[in-house]
Structure formats: C-alpha cells, structure tokens
Image (cartoon, rainbow, N blue to C red):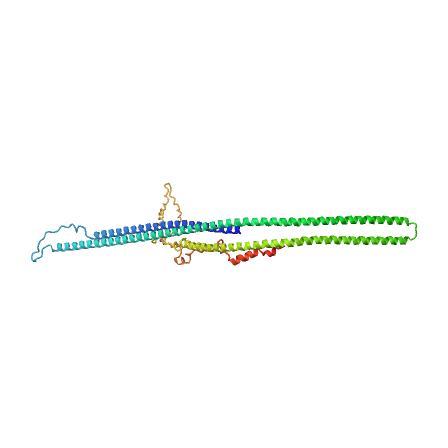
Length: 475
C-alpha cells in the first residue's frame, strides 16, 4: 500500500514537473512569437514609411513638373517687357495711342495672377496632403503604442498567472510532501507495532509447535517400545516353534520304525496347520494393532492441529482484514483527492493548449494567409529580369583577290529568341482567408498519460479480485 501511495505521489510530482516544463516552453515560444511579431510589425512599418516617402517624392515631382510645364507655356520675355511711354491718340478724346499695350499688360497680369493662384492652390493641396499624412502617421503611431501597451499588459498578465500557478503548484507539492512524510512516519510506527505482534505470535506458535513435537516424540518412543515388545514376542514364538519342530522331528525319528505312519503324518499336518493358523492370527492381530496405533497417532496430530491452527489463522486473518479495510479506506480517500487534483490539472492543461492553439502558427493571432507581394503590408515585388543583349549582325565573307570565285554562303538558322517575359502579375501566396476559420484551432488529441482515474467502485472490484476472502485461505 505504501509503495502504491508513493508511486501515486511520484506520478503527481512528475505531472507537476511536466506542467511546469510545458509552461516554461510555452512562455519561451510566446516570447519568440512576440519577437517575430514585433519584427514583422517593424518591417511592415518600414515598408509603409518607404511607400509613403516614395509617394511623397512622386507627388512632389509631379507638382514640380506641373509648375514647370505651366511656366513654360507662357511666352518668354513677358515679365521683362518694358512699359512704353504714355501718349494719346489724336482725334479720340480720353484715348491714347498705347491702348493695345495696356490691354497686353492687363492680360499678362491676369495670367500672372492665375499662375500665382494656381501655385497657391497647389501649395495648399500639398500642405493638406502633408497634414493628412502627418495625421495618418500620428494615428499609426498611436495605434502602435496602443498595441504595444496591450501586448505588454497581456504578457504581464500571462507572467503573473504563470507565477501564481507555479507558486500554487509548489505549495501543493509541499503539502503533499508533508502529508507523505507524516503518512510514512505513521506507517513506520504501525509496521514496528505489527512486527512486534508478529514476533510475539511467532514465539507463541513456536512454543506450541515445540510442545506438539515433544508429544509426537513421546508417542514415537511408545510406538518403538511396543514394536520392540512385539519383536521379542515374535522371536519367542519362533523359538517355541523351532523347539516344537525339533521335538516333532525327534518324534518322527523315533517313530520311523513303528507302524502308524499315516496317523503320525496326519498329526504332524494337523499340528502344522494349527501352528500356521496361530501364526496367521498373530500376524493379523499385530498388523491391526499397528494400523490402530498409527491411526491414533494421525488422529491425535490432526485434532491437535485443528484445535490450534484454525484459531490463530482466523484471528490473524481477522486482524489483517481490519487493517486492510482501514488501509483501503484511506487509500480510496487519497486516490479520490489525487483524482480531483489531476482532473483540475487536466482542465488547466486543456486551457493552456487552447491558448497555445490561438497564439500558435495558423491560429487566431498568427494566420497562415499573408498579403500578396506588392500589396500594402506585403513583401516587395521581385525586380524584372534584365533585357537580353541584341544579336550581332552576320558579316559576309570577303571576296578573294587572286581569282574571282563565287562561294556559296550557307545561311545560318537564326536562333529564335525566347518570348518576352510577361507583365509581373502579383501572385497571391498563402492560404485562402475563407478556410482560415476552419484551421485556426489546432487539433488536440488526449494524451494517453493523462487518463481519468477509475472510480472507487472499479477500485473495489479490482481489490476484490486481487485479495480474496480470508476464509478461503484456511487449511
């Protein structure tokens, strides 16, 4: 029982240790993923800033080109043309001779006003766009600060939850260790008492067996004495038979010459039959007495054993059954407590696995789908391949100078140039966002190590199969 309890406690310690290691591993993975997410966010922010700067530069170039084009549309020298002196046209009151120049000056002034007004409008538009981009940058910066604050708060909350859980588990392990030590001390005291009782019972049983052996020794001595007496009786009977035989032989020798041999022979045969009958009767009597003494000895031994052994065995088995019942009761209580703790740990492990599936690859916070190359927030496009060099023209061979011989030139097959590369179409990589929902949760299969503890009825059934009734072990 103590070994089973110790094994259960070791399993609980291993489970706590595994949970702690899994928590540390999850924390390390979380830190790595946070670092990768931060790097990705920074790279996306740099790409966005780069795209914004490129757009600003392109907008500035377009504005400068438009301003230059507008200034080039005006005729040269209009701004530096001298104003002619004033005069009057003869015959027309109030009208001078320079009316056409004044009209031209008014037209130039209108054009200049229009150009300055358009330049102011362009400048206002550029200022508005710059203010809009500044507001967008401020909003992006505020959003980034908010996300970083939320991330720091989530990390701090997860760290505090982990620390509190580790402290709680350490307290539980310390309490379980103290309970195990107290149980071990009480078990040692009970085992020492049980050893003392067993030693006293063994001494008592040894004394009883020693007395039984002395009784059996006395019975064997008595049986040996009876056997010796029977042997002496048989020897005396055999001596008498030998004497009788010698006497009969002497009588036969004396009566050889006498008539009546048949009668003497009949007498001898009769005497022989009587002797055989007496010997047979004596042998049967001796055998019956031996069997009777043997049966008495066996019955005495059996009665003595049946009087003492069942009493001691029954008492010992009753005490063992009582001790076993208390041990089983205590074990079932401890097993139920450990089962509840194990169920709570399994629930927490399932919650941690759920959080891991959310924060892991393909989860809710890190989807497999990414923007296409060239799109906002996506990777840049690949640079176009360089153009192929032009094919050099073929130079015909020169005519020989010493004689006029027309050589046939072999036309070489022109190498077909590869088709020009098509336009760079951005290819969409990654997973379809519609299928992201179905694969955002990682599939979790139950671990064979973390199985539910059997109920107390199953434990009682197993104990009843393992430990049979004490009455079945009687001799």
